Image (cartoon, rainbow, N blue to C red; front, side, top):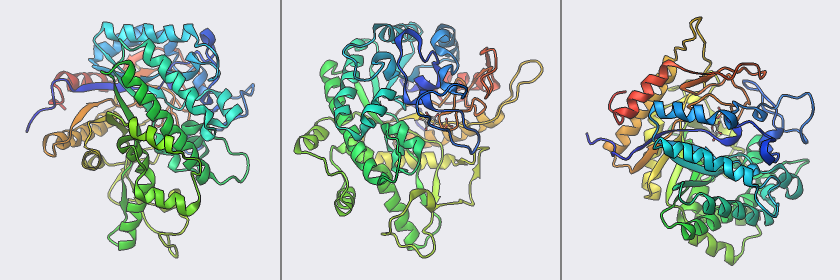
Length: 477
Ligand code: BG6
């Protein structure tokens, strides 16, 4: 079997709001992530109306990477990372999102962070918007439900592109932009588009309009980025969860196909610069996305991406509920069925390594662009032994199985893959639950769900394992 390319970007991924902390330091403004409380396993986070004294907001301190980044990056180098995926907190650069001038202290922080990475030969891979919209834009514009937010995002993107043009080559615009296809989920709507629903609005309609503005914003940013530095590689970023039909019943096959269309048109637009026919037909039939101009369509066409970044955690399985037809108004969450062939994690996330090979094939056949796995991993409870060691064979087992499937996709199926950056390789705040105890890392951080702990970093068993994987370019698993 052919090997992975020598320049394969083995790395690790995080997002600013989940590790930086320092939520009000050096002029940073409040983001939507700063008004999210801690949830628990199966208990969603609350999105409060501003910061309410006495509530636990885990992102405020997170793992205080803002003040620990030098020692952390040193450990990342020891791990052998070739790429470090993080995001730029929009609110460090434009605290309110619509300020006249960027905040120099925020810009300087990322200069220093990128310099520190480059010092060790670690390539920064940067997401511009990873669930961190300025809260002011949420309040004033209801996020991307307002067309004016397009230009505010583009200004943020342009500021970053110009400032870091000689330090950062790999960019992504919006993290998991397609999460909002599950429009009944408050967390996903707030983090993707800054939309907070107060009454009985038509959520699906609001989603299609807001997502359109985001896609236009993304395409404008891609165009500008390429003008600022033609060497930039600018990708999209989607959550890829293949939807399998529960069985061979033709209606379930068709349902899975329909639901895939409703989840992946976002990347169709990013890559092809046009909406797929099935979505045009759907929004026309429903009367959604009424504000779309010819100029928007031209922008989408001109600002297509260079690669497809995606996260892969699991697959889901769907079945048509009794008495329903495929063309009814179907709520995605109601269609999920238990897949009898896969186990689940402690958070009930299916564990399906073959699904990663399936995803890589699907995306490669559909888009014919380089792919980049920018998140993958297992959230698990870890136990610290008396001597401080942490034995996490379950994490190694999950990652090994996924890397094996990834390598088959490259070596046997001819998939063009740029890199692999497992999620949360240093423990951080879970996005979905706000927990610290849902850990993904090779590096343990001493902090619990109530915010207690020394923040001390230590290596889990998986640290040495992953270092060897990188060193051997994926040969020694
Ligand atoms: C992805 C996000 O959805 O999954 C990350 O891009 C997130 O921000 C990750 O942390 C894992 O999800 P969770 O809810 O376990 O943190």
